[in-house]
Image (cartoon, rainbow, N blue to C red):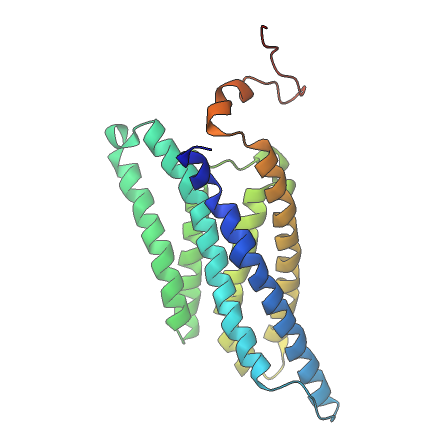
Length: 235
């Protein structure tokens, strides 16, 4: 493997080493938190410690940061590759500067989202973070598999990231809402996000099988992917 191939696997490696274990931890704490709440409502003394709710939120914040960061890393590789291969700084320096600014704005907005307490500002920074991901995902070089959007690693990943960002934005509303409607919304959306993460594991594995090593690209991209045939080598 060449250096460019190692750079390509940073995204899936982080997903396997950090993100998916975090998903398991967050789901476990979420289940314990709900069980404790239901036991308390039933009037029975729960053996689950009260700290699980706090830990669920803390690990949930870590998960959101990891998912958004992983999305940015996944987008950064193909965007940077496209810029370097086409020497875009010589053709359209504005686009290069804009892309760099979008990465900075997205990261900064996520940080400010965690620090915001008022609903207005939480909405503003959540929107900016999500918009940054979507705009970066629309750049040249990003493989989106739009013809199969329902089975696309890109679209599923962006959708999961947006759901995680929204979950962070409504945390304060969950604590303040006595009707528990926001809590129900939180549960439903994160169950959907969990299904999307499962889809990410499957589509990510598929994409790793389809992406050739750098030195193999010249031959592999001559193949007819529609008919699943490749040119025969002259022996």
